[in-house]
Image 1 (cartoon, rainbow, N blue to C red):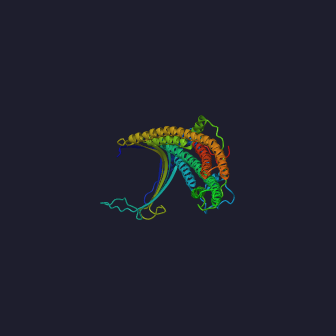
Image 2 (cartoon, rainbow, N blue to C red; image 1 turned 90 degrees about the vertical axis):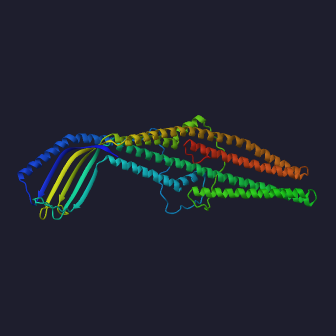
Length: 509
């Protein structure tokens, strides 16, 4: 509900010409009116043109300023740009693919990143659309009207027989909109920056997903190889035990124990191969390839030292993480939205120039009985001010202010979460590094123990149980070493993403 709207109009100049077939005016009078009109136009231009040029110059300066509508901080630049949806699936690579190549292909071909890129382009177009609101507007209208009028007693006033046709054109320029246009443009510019940072965040998340799945593939492939070796050892032990049993040197129980361990090793190998194939299908999907594509991924679970301290990691995270940048932008966006709401407190002022032509035919020419042709030119300024709206603007302002506070709290909470994420990922890296050192010693000792147990069994000094137990311990130690190396690189990939850094190849320091 709106009460007491105040509206006023300032007219700088007005000119009207009337041509009629049933009325006329002297040429002297028309010449005087024309001279008066030109003088009024000239005076208005001399008075208002310098101020208009200054306002336009200031507006263009604001629009072209590099810092206009941005929040302080480092802009999050996407890793790639210009992604296009492929008309047909890209062919599977024939050469072996390492981790860096896999990450690069995923950033180029994964459809989810293309969707983020399209959103970024949409926000940039919205920013340019809001920028256009600062310029003048040109509008046209064309209408036809048939009116019948009867008067009693009859007077000399008559309506055109063919109706009234009119055409108008108007150019208007916003002068002051209560900072609404400025706040709307700044909000759109900040949203464009926010969506660009969202692309960067999605790219880092995709990098972590590809690297994690790549490491899972290497982990399961390495464990499958280790399980094949363990199965080969158990099969060799079964052959030795069976040979001893045939000559009566070993009981049937030793053969049965060896056969049971062989079957367990076969089941474990089948499980590892299935996990490897599942991880391969998932990795193909992340790279934009069919799940059944026969791609060869190559790499090694190497230990790459990481020597940064917690303080260095936190400093990098606070400076580089896209989600922190986006949270700061969200605070500024909510502030600009509040500025838009607060524009309702101020008057709305715009300058305009319009011309209207009216006639009794579609071509606006004076024909027939009672025909006339009217042409009006007008230049002026309009100001409207909604004085009272039952608190609509006031409470909308309060709502927007509360949203600003909400975004600020969310930003502070995210900073605390980032600190926890960085520290937890760094602790995971250090833990996996220690596990690697311990597991390497465990593999070395388990290998020696198995060799000793097997030699003692062949010399008829040890038991079959000692050999099987040593073989099981060796397989477990190799699995722990593989898991420690894979966990280390996985934690390192997560730590880099937590710091907002792009490292496509984790194997390289």
